[in-house]
Amino acid sequence: MQTLSLAPAFSAAALQRLQVYYGTADLNAMQAQARQILGIDQTESLPDPASRLHNFERFGARHFPQRPPDSDESDLNTYGPEPGMPVYDLLKAYALTDYGALMIQRVLAQPNEPPFVIKAVPDTAPKAWNNIIILPPDFPRSDARFAIGGQRVDPLAIIHHEFEHTRFGRFRHDENNLLEEENFAVREVENPVRILNGFEPRYTYTQLDPAGQAVVSFSILQPERRQPGAWTFDPADPRQLIPFERP
Ligand SMILES: [Zn+2]
Image (cartoon, rainbow, N blue to C red; front, top):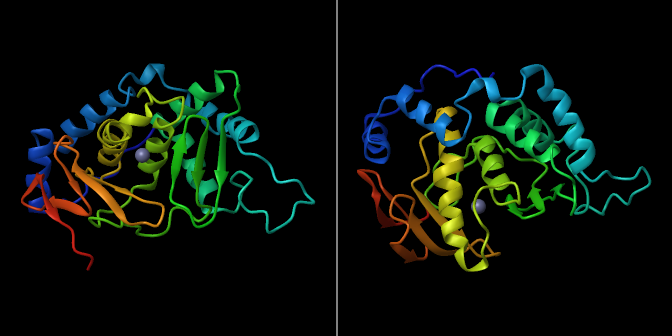
């Protein structure tokens, strides 16, 4: 089972934002709600703790494309995470959490057709689509923050978010609904994990173009109110957007 660490010390301003977002600033109540949203509140239906590491090994063997021993070292973009990469350890840690163990079990229970793969690709941002997740090999970088808004990154929550974009997620994919899908992935998948891990929820989402420039921003609580470019949340009210100035 996942053990929850001691309640983190949220600042007074953070507690006020949590009150707006969840209607409570009681961490136990927020975590109970998070477990429900993630479908991990019925502990008897979760994968047995002893089976989780074994499942991860089966998962890696099936879904991390293996580098042949004679492969060209410069051929970086084709293979899965390997032991020794930080992202490999992160995926292993993910597989041991309640939500991660459940996801890994769900993937293993289905036929691998078309093949679902996780690839370690240097110098990329985490991203995913139906049958693939792409992660940088050095993820998580220590104390990483989102480029726009500067909130801290919870790497485990990012992994769960990316699984949401695959065929194993709950949201019905639609090219015309990409921002709705992102809002769902942050609100219903990433933020509950963040709360379990002691991080404040993300309050905004900014879509970046391939060059890393902000395209459009929205508040997770009011996703229909979009602003072109880089916006972040008002520290006094996480529903309100304010223009983001790079520090
Ligand atoms: Zn996403």
